[in-house]
Amino acid sequence: MDNLVRQLSELNGPCGYEQDVAYFIRDYVKDKVESVEVDAMGNVIARKKGGKPGPVTLITAHMDEVGFIIKKIENNGLLRFEKLGGHDDRILLAQAVKVLGSKQELDGVIGTMSAHFCEI
Image (tube, rainbow, N blue to C red; front, side, top):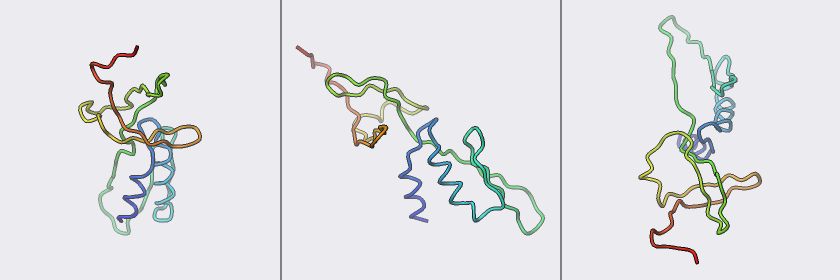
């Protein structure tokens, strides 16, 4: 179970870009259920029939994670971004992030310019 949690936690799936998570879950459960599909909206729908009569149970969960979208790369290399989804801005400073490029991932950290910094 620890390995599964680790694998899920290491997948990239910001709001609107959860495909890697959806396909991982689909592949993980496919041998444990009667049917599984990823629908047009990106939902993973798996069906498992029980062996005894009884109530139907629905299990739901979010697949996305906190994420951002790069809006501008400044001349000095700093990235300007906007939030994907909702989260509290007060916790962002000094948070480690992964920047997903078209060819590679880059490690980063969220920072801000000092209030008394000015370019000459």
